[in-house]
Length: 234
Image (tube, rainbow, N blue to C red; front, side, top):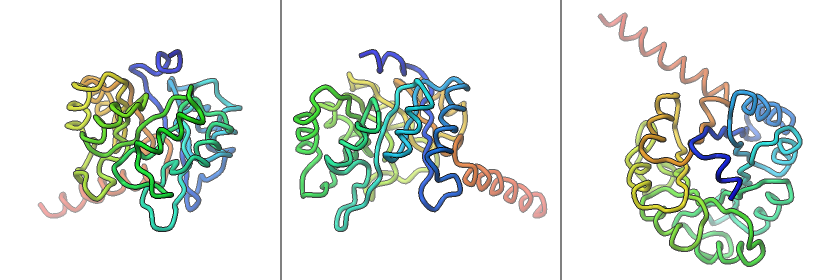
């Protein structure tokens, strides 16, 4: 599809700010997306109906949309029900990202059944599987997802907790998947993004390192303080 051709071997910028963050605002996220477009991003990943709608007005890039919503008694929160899927599409997203882990979704349905529901209502849309393990990635392709992303590696209780991108998962999935594999998660440097592509990723998502200034500041500050402590200890 044309949308997939547009993102191949490119940088997708995730423009998201949660309610407790200083930049939480559809207006600000739209401007952030515009800045990303000016910088050469091939697509935007965005969270929330209002953010997606405003970003759609601001940029011509493909949008990977999601809605983060927590339901009592269930752990999946990335576009967890058909209601959120519908809102993402109404807002103007080109691709819908959902939790595609083994965790049961609201309504006590599996990822397989949820995807069937989505495809029944919206047979022509592209659906991205946010997964956390190799097995989940392989199963996502088998049950009919259009794209797989390593978004949730390290964020489920049973996936490896590593410091930095999960390059092993990216490499292993890229060897077996026939659908596009998107590398996402803890990518902090251009060098790490390039490595993900070299390992076989179809495209790379970078969010925090570009669009969350409080986290960027914290990252710099931690490294500086560590260096200062080390110097004083000599």
